Length: 422
Image 1: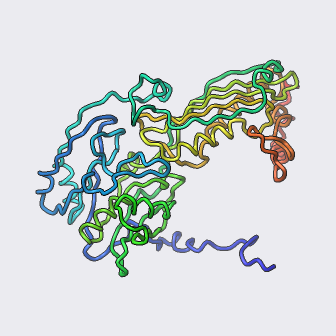
Image 2 (image 1 turned 90 degrees about the horizontal axis):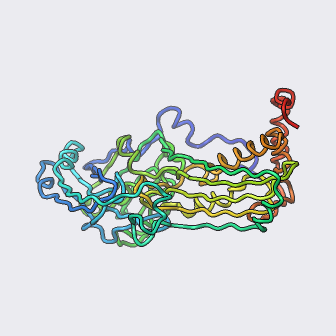
Image 3 (image 1 turned 90 degrees about the vertical axis):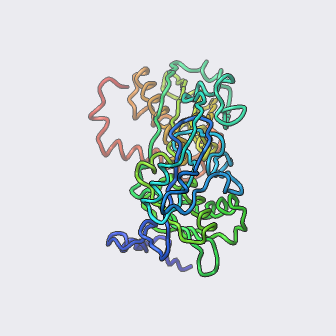
């Protein structure tokens, strides 16, 4: 069989245009007759709202101002449709979109934004995911703030801890992280030569964008075209809708190309973040450092909207044991609504955060037992034929032991850190 691409080092198709500055990003696109758009966003984390755009519509150069009343199906979301295209009666986070001003110039749009009157009626917010899980806490959406609960059970956790000579318990926390990609969100929508509603954006999921635009505007999906321009970084932050529906709505209505470019500040408050996790771990090992049991409770703050919370907290639960064999395992992971910025996809999808917990547990167990941090890992690391925390048998491609071994010899670990360990 002839392989033209597999196993070969080939030049990236877009490499030359990017390094020479010739690549076309959404903000580089200009079209004859195009107009501009700007989004008005909430300054409150939790409040009922009333919107008045009458004075703003009188601003010279403002063509139209869109609110929830203009959207046929005013919701979207990658898993749950829990986000509104424009907030109707309530905002749930700072940065929620409320109105979209379209004007002949960016200056006209900005002047229009200043004239929109928002009447806020503050609602008690909830910003701690642990408190948010209580029945008595303010509700971000409906009857509960718990979006998702993942359970993992393997073996008998009580027997595992009874076999353990040493047990270590700790709580670990990771913080929210901004993607900070180089290119803030930007896009342009237009009606193409075939009469299709076309939206040119930098996105990670053009097929999902197409579905969500069509659903929100209540038009056939075959009438929507998503053009993925060059992407100036993403890391998961472009998996959710930001400006796509706003652009499509305005273009479909006024039949003109509409362009939007976010500022860095707007980018910060508009898209998802990495989930902050609170991880309570209890890990036991025998006298030789072999792991016997691990119990973990993981609480993920998904903020005002679910986004990819189900996937992220499931991954966190699945990977809670790390690259180690543990006979008895109990894990409960939760995704919880709060009025914080919403969290979604970011490199690692939940597996990144839990490594902070399980690796520190390994270090502490080794310290209590007088076993160096490499040896205790070597004794427990997954190998071919091992069962993971979920019971999956690893049949091939498990090079962890070899990888760690190479690192150990590469840094001459045992010579440098041999004192005080057995």
